[in-house]
Length: 372
Image (cartoon, rainbow, N blue to C red; front, side, top):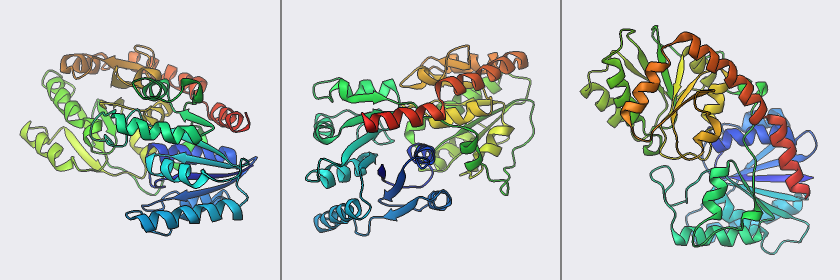
């Protein structure tokens, strides 16, 4: 098969990183092409190394003429590369995938991957499910052969409500990672300095409202006041909430205990140095970063919301907390002071990752969806 993946960007991010794994598995049996809309081509060098060509749509996306030209550009790609499968990721490219395949031959199959349980108005700021946005999703889905959701939570989000996508058309395929993926997020040249401490809590993500780092900092403040371990919290990431979060750290007198290391290319090095991974997103489609933490055997603290319980089994490979409940989050931090308990969770983490979030399963399931 000849497959083209349409994605908004190929920078670093959950959907973008996931696509790198999917494509690596697909090139063994298929010819694969990637077309992206905007942003820096972070993954292009890697794609080139595995024989995958990347193309950026040539026209601006902010006016009608530009959109039409981009649609015609995609149609030429389908013809020139003899495309069988058009697979769209993220809202902008769902639109382009839909409109560019509307009047194509039946030979071309159109698929959509849904990476988050939220509509395109909410983005990474707030949970939203507007009738208009769902109507647009419904229209796009009518052309799609199948919709692939990254979790059951995402599947339920789009298949319930006043306007919804037919549940029989949506199939859940979990992200799958392996040792090769870990190698791609490891940069041995760039080391991250993290101060030494008896107990290091860490978190990775874009500094946006969705990730709710403010709550983690406040919970850590409460925990730190009653701990004799002199723990530290290290936050990796950049984003619009950065200034606000740093101001909060100063206000809470946590400058000696909370550290921001900015955007990190070497996620592996960061995860190796921490003891416990903290998360408190307001919503998640799945949370690829949690799988990355599991690969390094880090027990996870996270709220019992969205798709998080599909990744974290309470008391098995991490601890689930009540939503926006500081006391519950602090109690989880206290429980994980116990080294033997942490080690037990760590061992189960790696086993759970191998069984449920298997790279091979992800590739074979997606391939079967294409064929059937």
